[in-house]
Image (cartoon, rainbow, N blue to C red; front, side):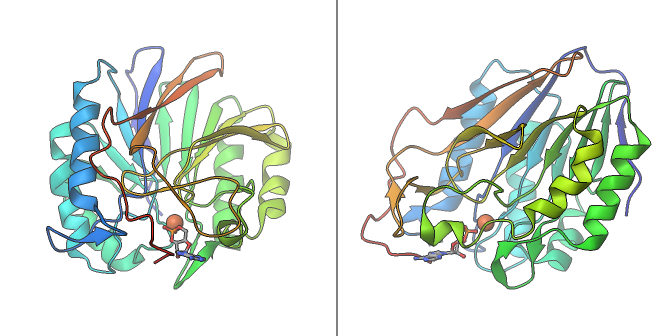
Length: 276
Ligand SMILES: Nc1ncnc2c1ncn2[C@@H]1O[C@@H]2COP(=O)(O)O[C@H]2[C@H]1O
Ligand SMILES: [Fe+2]
């Protein structure tokens, strides 16, 4: 495991952009349920650059590729280059850990670090919840003990935790079977540091959430490709446009955050699709 990445000299408010679940293909015209994921990702990246939000770094929270092809990671790296800020990443269920690590390691902008120390008030911890080959997630004993160690290392810092899988149900049976399988093991690790944990962010469910779990704030973010409609027991797509999330971390531990979406609906999916 890499050492911490340190941002020593940021302004007092830390600004982060989260992008998630781009599901890129090796080929230019790869489509997920009708959505050309490279074009929709490009549209989101263009929109991020048109916003006045002056972010310090970017979190990419998994499912970067769809077709189990390492070329998707090179595409990702080339596409995010104009964003110019450091990018941190974690694995989703569609990612191939070795290929992801090896491909992304070739780009100086993309950081392998999972502990990000921001100024002297915050740390961001990136967890790997993917289980090779299946959609649901879990935090391994190694991940849980790494988390416990990093929380104990800086007991005076506020903490933002990022992972791919959802902890809270979406009230959609088809999707909830693929949630994080061991949330109570996570809760046990977090409990001694309850007052430090200011937020947990994730992707995977392709929908916006700003809610609470055991008193912890939970934020989920739309995908840059297809959207899942909440509260549907059968697989159901949502016509909402693609999106991303802005986060502002304040020195007193407050998090201000909002989801942004494309202002147009160019990338509507095929609503007859039943899954993938
Ligand atoms: N119709 C479906 N029923 C159940 N699971 C599905 C269906 N379609 C896709 N999935 C899985 O559910 C996962 C949810 O988001 P992911 O993008 O991680 O990948 C998806 C697939 O692995
Ligand atoms: Fe996922």
